[in-house]
Image (cartoon, rainbow, N blue to C red; front, side, top):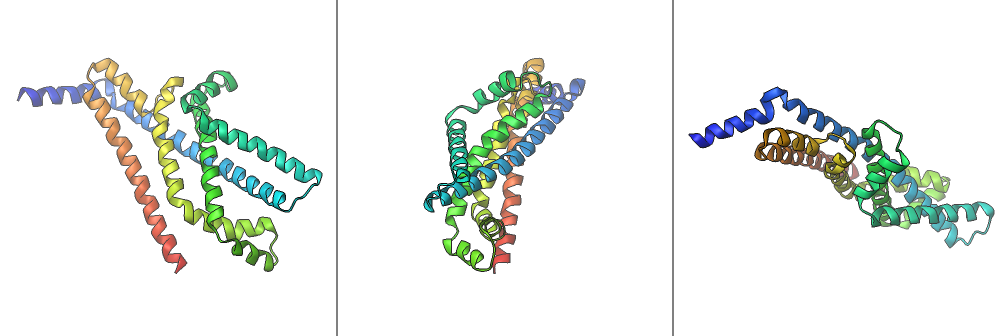
Length: 241
């Protein structure tokens, strides 16, 4: 009985006393905001990088030497260096550089964290999309060109939709990775789920419920994301028949 009484007391201290459940709720809200915004930034910017690399690669194959082609190749090298830096340095360092150097005067650290995570995710998304484009048969591009589409329209209407279908599980995994990586935003004084558990734990001097509850929430979020993508994959598979 003493064990269960102690457990109930710990639960009460963690969630009920001083309405501490609101700290977790606020942390969950911030975690979801950062994840969604970062995923959108990462997908858009990552797609731009992947398509730019594809266009520059085509110019290299066609051995174009115009000024426009030179500019394309130069920017592509910048994008390649960007991807290498983002993938080769710790995300925690990138977050702190963004918060304390690049966006130092920006008061809303949730926006800062969203940008930092989005730019990091873009580097990984670009490589995923490049792989997806490479997985589409080259005949699809030729077929689009034969229908009168230019290279951009063929990529947008024919190649890219097929590539996205092929890489959907990998994109889902990247989204899940972004969600779990948000646990470090406490470094820049943002109250996410992990930071919320730290705050409550410091007040209750009890680690069990703050840590386990946050772990359960993360697990449920990842589980729901995986389920949603699984259903989407099934619908896409039916549309292919």
